[in-house]
Length: 123
Image (cartoon, rainbow, N blue to C red; front, side, top):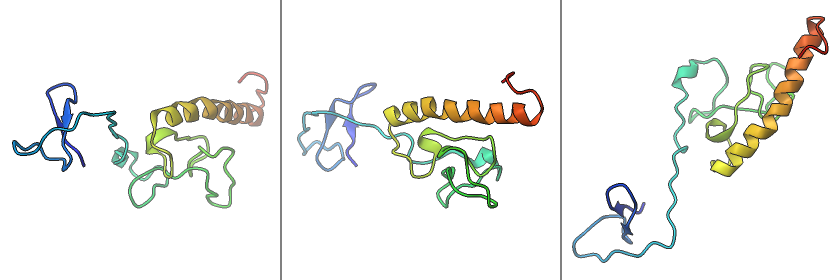
């Protein structure tokens, strides 16, 4: 993995990834940082199904129930999007898109709950 010379801003990556006096810096054409590669889902404490790495499983049949959305977890009405989701793209733009798409499913789920409670049209 390349390293970067600089305090607050990346300035000089090297080819080997180590900053060495002997090694010339390579002017960066672009730099990317990946912050969602390791999920921090311990706080879920077994609430929803996660894979072996700790990413939240979504869109899978659980207890014979088909999810209403590819973003629904193993628990009805709990949805996950973005980096925390298993098999996601792990990119900001994708996470934002998933967040906007899941709103339709959440509204549908809430409307279904309202219907079950006899309060249709109030959700």
